[in-house]
Length: 411
Ligand SMILES: Cc1cc2nc3c(=O)[nH]c(=O)nc-3n(C[C@H](O)[C@H](O)[C@H](O)COP(=O)(O)OP(=O)(O)OC[C@H]3O[C@@H](n4cnc5c(N)ncnc54)[C@H](O)[C@@H]3O)c2cc1C
Image 1: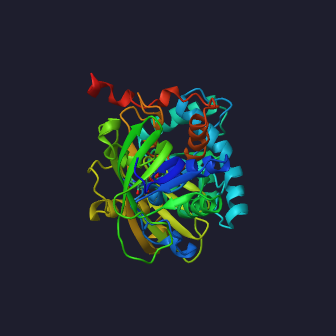
Image 2: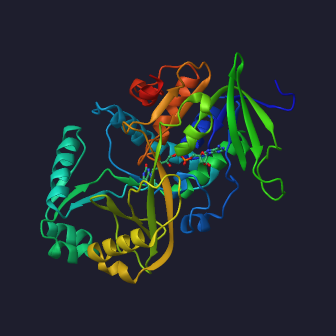
Image 3: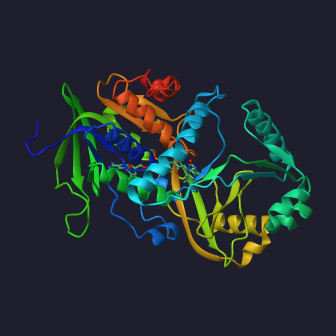
């Protein structure tokens, strides 16, 4: 064992939405937690962090913050159960974060419109609406004239849409993701979580007392708030939770997760109008508009398989502008504040992997939440903290077992 090692009960590797909520939940339960991330975890000015290009590589900073409806009481599908638990936990979590940190993540039950413009989109929405009704989730098909009254900025679309139909879903929330992450960072700090930021994880070696985690500082210069690890230092953890998002498979060959996650890039355009022109989330096929409480409107998104390459492209941004022109022409005169991309972590079966690494006593993984990592973060955190503390989680986590994604490579 290395003599200059940092000792901790639990090492949480990765400080996106998943790692931060897990670190927060474990610290609330009295565990000594060390959170490691290669990005800075210093505070960004609140006003700036909501309008500027995400300053970090983590996918969570890029997310739109749509939280679609869910119902824990009626859900039978494992993902819907985790979503239902998260949906139920979100308001209480946000109230606590506001109390503890003074940072308001702007959680709003704004409702969502689901529109269809083609026969395929209509078929898929008819199925979705019936699925939601089976789960006792409110979803009302609404006259296009009613849509035009409630969202006047969409009036021209209601006249133009050839096979247009609209559904109103009142239990859709939105959250301002950068503020949510800021609040979580601050809350972790206040609970005494040790933050090793701008610190890369190079490997995890398990042994009888837990794991030795190799880390190194990204820069050796001064001028940041975190407790930086010097070059080549180690972290000794009784338990380890790997929350590296789409990069989780690259951190340690021994965990055999390299083939488990595929990056799927999404791009976002951020607009600003002088006065608010929309009040709810507007979903149309894979695209959406999210009117934030600060007056900005997020336009998203796309799904691209381009490996681990970040960045926006003129083609996708022009498609997003075209989407805006067709759906909400009033937004054409909006100012473009920023554009950014993020890499969604996709697993081959679409389920996140949450649980202990096969054959390991002390190393857990929570990654692969694809398009729902913000929404699923409160439920994931509670269930992962249960597993780490040896308590039976309230949602069946077996369908999310780690390793099934690797079976074809192990055989
Ligand atoms: C455009 C877009 C829109 C989205 N919209 C929504 C939405 O509306 N609702 C929703 O619920 N979800 C949404 N998502 C999905 C959501 O963002 C992801 O599911 C979620 O962010 C995954 O969180 P994570 O914590 O697992 O990963 P990340 O946020 O990527 O965090 C992983 C962390 O691990 C760190 N890390 C990785 N490797 C190392 C290493 N070797 N050493 C140190 N640190 C390391 C990274 O720096 C990073 O901070 C969206 C995603 C995109 C791209």
